[in-house]
Length: 256
Ligand SMILES: C[S@@+](CC[C@H](N)C(=O)[O-])C[C@H]1O[C@@H](n2cnc3c(N)ncnc32)[C@H](O)[C@@H]1O
Image (cartoon, rainbow, N blue to C red; front, side, top):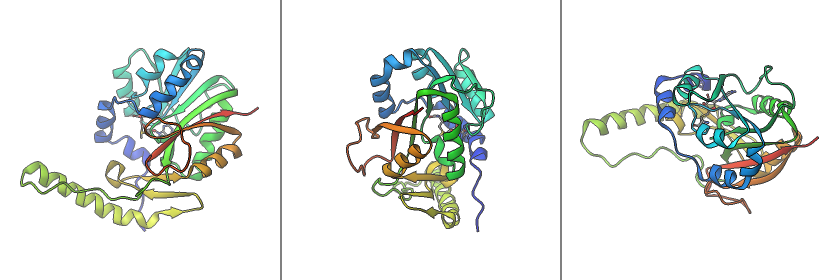
């Protein structure tokens, strides 16, 4: 059996850190959500989990009453601090944040499927920790891979052959990634409405959690959250099975 690469090792890798440090683009679902919740954000203490190199910091910080970003990768937090020296950015693990007071946060965000490198047990820890730090009625936004997406187990595509050094380098890299995939896919797990698969992110180095919207809704209800809205990848509201979005954004609130 192949050993999956621990996600923490991927997120501290120099090349991956460089990738996220250049990454600025805000995603359509995030923009749609911000547009609809601007007023709420203005009154909110916001906790941005898995903040990485701070892609979401310039989106959320100016709109929030207070803002804290947290990530368990020290080099990514370092990169985020370099980009946004005025932001409160900390190294921490979303599964356990004892330094955050219970019920002291209004809005928690876990963007860009950051929660999906965790399996069921760790996801449950994150949901419990988010529940603990949120005030009753507080809100949680996260994105997660959509198991209903058409071709969700697609393989990396190869570029049309062009005899150049760059092409040869890229092709060699793809081949080695596919060899890794052939090993790692033996560890894939398929459940009812969810799966943990080795997709092409970061050259097939990660196992990612995928689920249907129905599974997510049930898991959230079990953890004390009520789903208020689901955003498709293009920012429109979810209205029925969505085979186009590779991930969905879930917007839910803490009962209690
Ligand atoms: C796909 S990256 C997204 C980074 C950033 N949110 C963005 O959109 O550019 C996922 C991030 O989640 C972080 N992460 C994963 N598991 C975590 C955990 N248990 N606690 C804190 N951060 C975590 C990773 O270090 C990584 O920075």
